[in-house]
Image 1 (cartoon, helix red, strand yellow):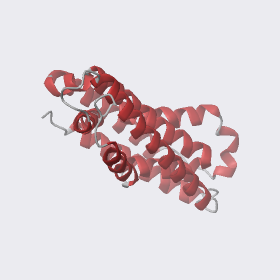
Image 2 (cartoon, one colour; image 1 turned 90 degrees about the vertical axis):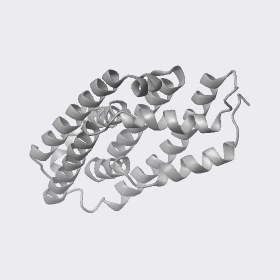
Image 3 (cartoon, one colour; image 1 turned 30 degrees about the horizontal axis):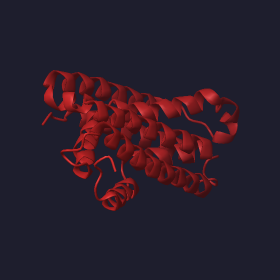
Length: 211
C-alpha cells in the first residue's frame, strides 16, 4: 500500500521510540503535576502537533532543505535555541505559589501557553525534522510513486500512537501527583526542573550541527 513495507516493524519501532523517556516525557509529567490532567494533556497534544508539522515538512521536502542548506538549518537552530533558553529562564525566575491558591489563574490562557510551549519546542527543533526525514523513508519503497502520501500516513500513525501514550502519561502523572500539587515548594522545584530542562534543550539545539 503506497509503497509502504514492514508496517508492523514501523509500528513496533515507533511504539518503542514513543515510550522511551526523554525531554518530552519530562515536560508532560512536569505540567501534569503542576496543572493537573488538563495541563498534562495540553502539553502532550502540543508536542504531538509540533511533530505533525515536521511530518508534513518531511513529506513535502522541507526537512530535506534543512539537511541540504546549512544557512536554513542555522536560522531554525538559533531561533529554536533562543526560544527554549528564554522560556527556561522565565520559568527558573518565576514566583511560585500553591496550586490551590492559583486555581483562578489556571484558565484557558495558561493551558494555551502550555500547549504552545510544547508545540514550539518541537517545531523549532531541527533535530526533530531530521529524525522524521531519516526514520520514515526506511519503510517506503525507493521506487514508490506515492512517497508523499506514504510519509504522511506513516507520520500520522506514529503521532497517533505517540499521542495516546503521552495522554496516558499525563493521566498517570496527574493522578499520582494529586497530593503534592498544593505544595508551594513542590511547584517551585517543578518550575526549576522544567526551566532547567528548557535551557538544556536550548543549549543542545544551539550546538547541533547540520550533517
